[in-house]
Amino acid sequence: MDNIYLFGISIWKRERVKHFFPDTNLTFVDRDSDSFDRSVDRVIVWGRESFPKAIGRAKELEIPILFMEDGFIRSISLGLDFAQNYSTVLDSRGIYFDTTAPNDLEDILNSYKFDSELLKRARRVQRAIVESRISKYNIYRDKKLDIDTSKYKKAILVVGQVEDDASVIYGASGMKNLELLKLVYFSNPKSYIIYKPHPDTVKGRREGRISKREALKYANRIETKVSIDTLLDIADEVHTITSLVGLEALLRNKRVVCYGVPFYAGWGLTCDKRKISRERRDLKLLELIAAAYILYPKYISPKSLEPCEVEEVLRELKAQKELYHSSLKYRIEVNIKNFIYKKSFAVERNLNALSNIFTKAGSRVKKIFGD
Image (cartoon, rainbow, N blue to C red; front, side):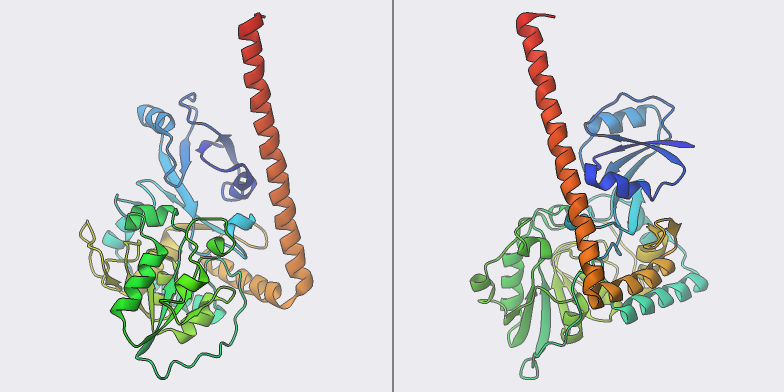
């Protein structure tokens, strides 16, 4: 049985993460530490979290290091709602959102020889995603919007992001949503502009909120609680910093303009406003789909939570999404489960904080009064 040490995994994510590593001994470590030996088979670090001692020790002992993040088909509802994720990535070089450094996805895109069978499979995956109207989070319902864009040159969807998200920091030097919106507005006269803020910023949980009054200076309309597919049905183009919506738009044959450097930019499929630092070959869309949805991530079944392939996730997620949006009873059940999980995590976190306080207080008492 493999012995894996994991660093930077939030307490609430740990039970969720275990499903991706069946028959494996997992040790979750809260702080940077080099207190492990050669009995460890792998060290896993979440995203781009900083654990220099752990990484240094792993290199010293020649233990493989992997960097972990959510994949591109995640869940019903948001990560901050503590929803179970159905995909993850494990990268041995870096991580896909940090395009300033090499990573496994970039290597696949740059050098993999995509055969005809894989490309046929990618075509089926594309068709399943588009026909099922599946995106990363699948939180909002499809709607028919009463928008007439016939008097305009084109319709543009501008996608807001969490401004302190790692993909924006690494891929766009911390570009702001308002800056993006202004650039689109002034460079696309006579266009109908729809602004979709990120759900986490709408709820005030993360950085990047633009006031409605300010946003409407540069957009014709703001949409929050509708599905991405609802807006992609209307849009001729998608303008984004580094959002995954850009990739989802490519799957739906939309023109995509990138103001940062997401992993899907620089392959001849997008209009790129920033220079790509490393040379990249031109790709066909199916090759990008094969890499991003088939070769790079790991998946678990939404039903059984056991490892599976992307096609199974798409089938089961389609059924789960349809049930979530059609059944109030099921939607309440899912939301209550996530709420209870969130509250139990908050209690555990508070207990850990109290334990640390008492431990520190005890140490100080010993120093003052002795044993």
